[in-house]
Image (cartoon, rainbow, N blue to C red):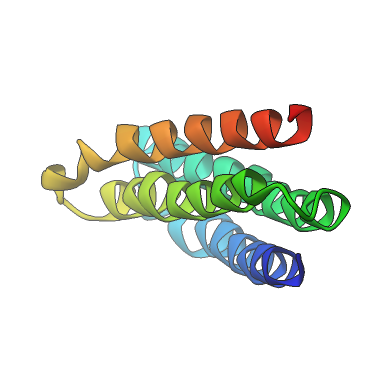
Length: 121
């Protein structure tokens, strides 16, 4: 499905830009533990943006597997919730976002389970 290839590609561009920003602009401004939180957000962002591209390719191979598409949307939500909350938590005192991060992780897990079920069915 073309949508996920495009979305994944856009999210990869953002991940590279966000990662570069962290490595250059934030490295001297953040405490090491906060920088590590930021880097974890970037790592998961990259992995799951690549996953969206993969899902776009898989959806083309399994055109009747709507569950794969649903899995892709869960991955996209996971990037926003998990990585997005880690970015904000590392640079701002927004403790209220702490509970959002696990919801993003759960979105990632649900997304990958749905992709596996879609391929197996």
